[in-house]
Amino acid sequence: MGNIKEYLTAAKCSYPVWGKEDTIYYLDTRDGVPQIWEKDLCTGSSRKMTHNSDKISRMRYFAGQVFFAMDMDGDENEQIYRIGTDNREVMPVVYHPRNVRSHLGDVSGDWVYYASNKRLRCIFDICRKNLLNGKTDILIEGKDAVCLPLSISPDEEILLYSRRTSFADMQIYCKNLHTGEERKVSKEQQCAMEESPAWLGDGSGFYFISDREREFKRVLFWDRETGQTQEIYEVDWDVTHIAVSKDDRYLAVVVNEDGDSGIHILETASKKEIKIPQIPLGTIGDEEPVTWSETGYRLLFSFESGSRTQNIWLLDAEEGTLKQVTENENMTVGQDALVEPVLCRYQSFDGLEIPYWLYVPKGIPAENLPVAIYIHGGPESQIRRFYEETIQYLVSEGIAVAAPNVRGSTGYGKMYLNLDNKEKRLDAVGDIEALADHLTKTGTADAKRMAVFGRSYGGYMTLLCAARMPKLWACAVEVVGMFNLVSFLKHTAGYRRAAREAEYGSLEQDRQLLKDLSPEAVIEDLVCPLLIVHGANDTRVPVSEAEHAAKRLEALGREVDYLCFEDEGHVIIKQKNRIKYITAASEFLKSHLLQK
View 1 (cartoon, rainbow, N blue to C red):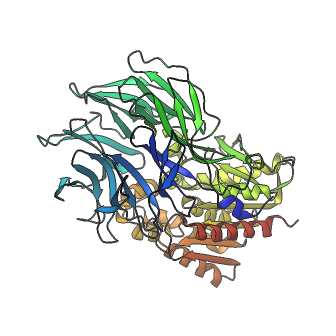
View 2 (cartoon, rainbow, N blue to C red):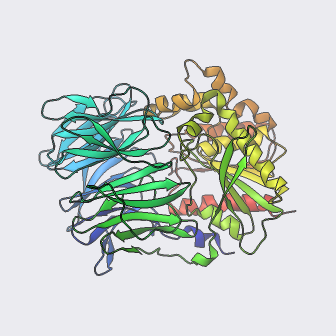
């Protein structure tokens, strides 16, 4: 047990990139929101470089400068800046009005490559800006897909970019900036997820990750001269990261192995795996860079687990060493007080096996416990072995947490991913009902003290579960979730709509289905106490969804509390707001679950 602030004020270190020699840059939340810090690995000294009240989300280091993206009050309309590593002067690189989003891609030579929806808000054009004279070119006009720049070849001739039509179809294209010629990396026409291209030093080709013609993502190599692809590495799990050492000798491959990350280092010449120290059970963030040093064979990455807050780690493949290189400031809860989850499985209503993580309070048998079921967002996402403050605090207070990866989650193959599409949406709700039944039948849960909570898609699922299974729950907490799928699709950011329609159904063809699958359609059946949390600047799920849900439940005479943050978006990220939000959610759950 402990004060909830002790779990919330621990700094998280993420998104590491190499600078000169033994210098690294990373994001650190010790002062409330992610800001850029610099660390000298030789001396161990560190210094804060940026001092903003808004979060920084992506970085690139190039020629003595750090390029980064930052939004305003959580609106996700990121602008691009750069800061000198010597003078620490912040300069805008691509800056537009608040309703324009710029996506930082690559930086090379005199150019920064980025995507922008300035021309049309519902699409992204791929652009480049000259850092010397400020000239801006539109290289590729977006049309029927979200186009984002990935990387430029070492000779700055070939730009790789992705075209995404859904969260299951994102393919890599090449554009020759000298001739204007464009071509798709893979000639086949079927859907596929292709990502993370990593060029060889001489520009003769690149490695990339793809699930084309496979259930899981594997590593392929594209030959620039022939245009042919070759399979390099494949296992029955998703590859999440790849990185090529600066001399092309080694290829680092990170694999999501049933929710835990594993690092594998291959010699590129022989394709044989070398022996390295193994990281503990835990997770390397899917959207975090994994990078090699300019000299030597040192691999930099961020890592976390249930009992380890996120930090920067360093693997030296040549010396065979592994160490953590940052520390969590303000961490007052000891690692021995934190709980690592246990990976379990159960059978759903149709026999499908569903994995879930079970967090059990320390020193207490897993018998007749109050249980909160946590549903992740996405739905194209996966709850893994993360450090999650709310979960750890609830467990410290005697509440067990079960976190399932219901059908539609990533990490278990394309077939599993597509099991909840459109008219099959309620099958995922059935997975939650089956989990509740499993937890009570195995004796883990007290049937009278169960709650459901989740954020984003997990918030939508929370509302559905609370309304469609009203007798199961003592209470529910819904964060930034959708109440009506029709109004959600109408008002979500225009560039997100097409990809979301591929998952839920289209406004034009599936309107009745969208209504039927909305929590609003069954809201009269929701009877348990409910807490709703939202950010006023949310561009993904507009705050109107929360407002309509709260007003409707109040009109029905239900017990509903509504908490809205005026300076947040889809993710409640500012420290003062996170403390208020998670304290409110935790106290709400405790008040209904800890009374027998």
